[in-house]
Amino acid sequence: MHSLPIFLTLTGRHVVVMGDGAMADAKRRLVERAGGVPVGQDHPGARIGFVAVEDDAAAEAAAERLRARGLLVNVADRPALCDFTLPAIVDRDPVLVAIGTGGRSAGLAKALRQRFEALLPTGLGSLAQALFAARGAIRARWNDADSRRRAIDAALSEGGPIDPLATGGVAAVTSWLAGADGATQDRLAIIRLRSDDPDDLTLAEARLLGQADRVFHRPDVPAAVLTRARADAERLACSSAPSAPGAGLSIDIGFA
Image (cartoon, rainbow, N blue to C red; front, side, top):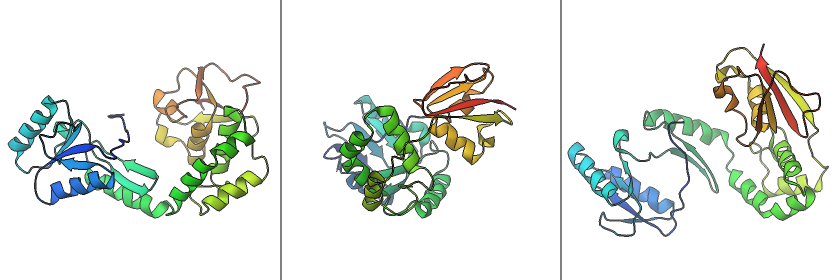
């Protein structure tokens, strides 16, 4: 990764926005939309700043002044001067999908955003709210963390009772909790790689890696492939997976 994606809580916080014209106005609207308060460059309480100035030398000088005061700075259309860049955003509040290219191509980020806009249901936010409201019921139903995570993963999978790409929201969560147990069976899935390129994984293989509790892998499996697994999945280098790999979903991955 070229940078660390994070979500900043700006509600009530002061954010410097420097510049005039359409570009600066767009930055002010974005800050206000996130609950922040746009202020001038000399405000003592700000911790981040946006510079939207046309002249190259003036933009660089403004960024240096803000950075000298300890602010993290974004300079519009000048990624080399940025401490952080702004992604294209798909807003299904409270669900946010951020698409960044590290400042390489705003056009590509925009095109991807438009694809995701068409893909993600407008009611996706209500599903997130319903799951948040049901936390107590979910914990009561599945009282240990591993079984709870597996049940939620199965329910949210493609075609599952609360598939996020299907319509549902509150009613879907209620029906899921009132339905059958929904726990996933312990199993071992086998993936045999055709190359060291993670893009050669099939969609089904990528989904398995994203859901696995542990990954048994040959020492020659590239790190780029292993990063497709869940961040908290166990990764165990070995010549072959054991006959009893453990609870939940295990993956045995190696080259064909």
